[in-house]
Image (cartoon, rainbow, N blue to C red; front, side):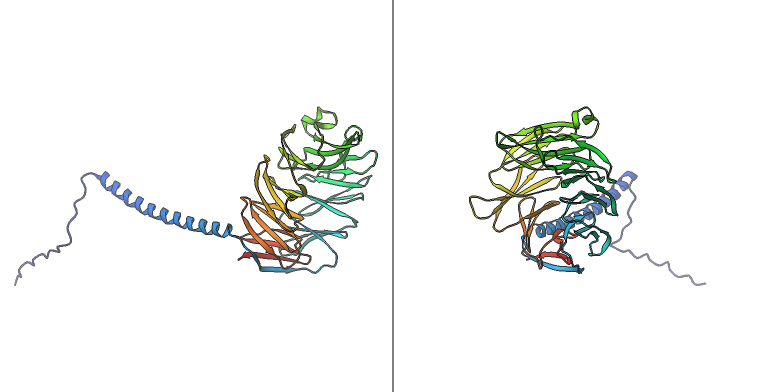
Length: 404
């Protein structure tokens, strides 16, 4: 039996046996250090990606654009002249012959025939009402269709609606006008007692979303001079202790209050010909602030956070846009040429439009868009995505995006 020599063990110079650590805690500490470095690297990459996305968004969002290009178009031919208002997840189309709820493809979700000579509309988040100005009919709707009908005994001048469908109406009567609140079925809930000598003639009103507070502006004459009053009516427990539910009554000399609106349940603005008054308080509103105006008001519009005014610029040819917060602090003002009768606040943007012309401002005052659409604008509001908008014209709903 032949035996060979034992093979010599080859040494690999770049390999060596690693001795286990004497303390197991050192190994765990090393493992944690490796895991932390990996996690730290992943977080750094994620932060850089988020910053890049945010930077791109801010760059696009704060540019000034001059062209609106069509991304999609939905046409629906109609024969009657109609008005359009954004509501819920769609658009209301209304005229003398009917009320239609459209989705965002300009498709008819439901149709309610009407016979209204002079339609006017008031919209809240979950309900809206269409009334016949000078007539006796009010129809209350939700996104699902007709909720109820109201018949009044006197001609309708103005209406206000709550988010639940409660309607308050100023009913015309030269000697003894009425303010009556109805539920959606037409039942009378509250009737305010109006006497021209004591309160004056009601000219504007608004109701909180929950239907618990009604604000009314009145005009009256004192020695041949027209003055104003404002009254707040609480339909809850606080108002039950007061005569006619009135919890606040103030009068103003030298100011003609012509409009009032709520911004949430605890803040309201009364707008006059030369000033606006801010009221604060949910149960018993109190005057918080008065802001004098040096220009004639063309129009007023608001959201729950901001309100805007288009004013006639007397010193220069043109107009001025002013935007305020709920406290009456001026956020920004911009002078512009041309006419804009329509304005709205959509989130953090202010949209002005008239005919085909449109200007869009960010709430910080940056001009985002100034240009023309392809047709007269009946309604416009933001769409999903950066710089995208729905634009409603007489027969067509377009999705447009802003470009240079």
